[in-house]
Amino acid sequence: MKQWKLNSMPDGIALTPEDFWQFSLGHYTRAGVEPACLSLQNHFGGNVNLALLLHWLDCQQLSLSNQLIQNLIDTASHSDSLLRQYRTMRKNLKPQLDHDGYQQLLRFELTLEKQQQSELITKLNTSTSPFLPSTHTPNSCNLERYCHQVGADILLLPLQANTP
Image 1 (cartoon, rainbow, N blue to C red):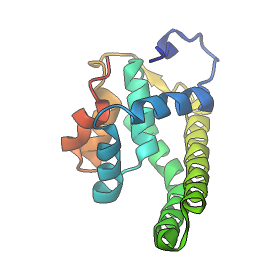
Image 2 (tube, rainbow, N blue to C red; image 1 turned 180 degrees about the horizontal axis):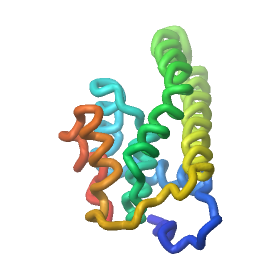
Image 3 (tube, rainbow, N blue to C red; image 1 turned 90 degrees about the vertical axis):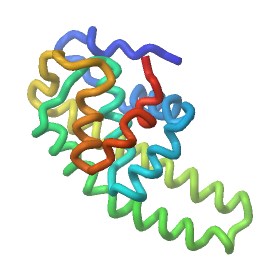
């Protein structure tokens, strides 16, 4: 897996949506991550893209303030409604579609997910001094606080998937 070196970025260099997307695709396929993400989304009302972003930053030991995490939650909430509506429609249409038609709907849903990720990265990149001094244990700070906020503490370890 590619090692993301965000913590060595010089000031003024922005995080890219494509790097975040590639990290997300790789991490989502790790053992236990997909079911943990779906549980976060379906049982705790959490946002998978935000959880992946917070974990990506944790892997780089980049800690966010609680206020910035809340701002990211607010940013994600704007597209969450559209994503929820689309997922419901896709699930309702599944029995009426052939395999190719259903796969086309899944691909479009991924486009919506990627757009939400881009919105999150834009919010992060346009925030003033987004990163706090790193004083936390790797893989725990941002994602741990988010899981606690949505009542999904039990999902922290599966979401991290023992990421080094």
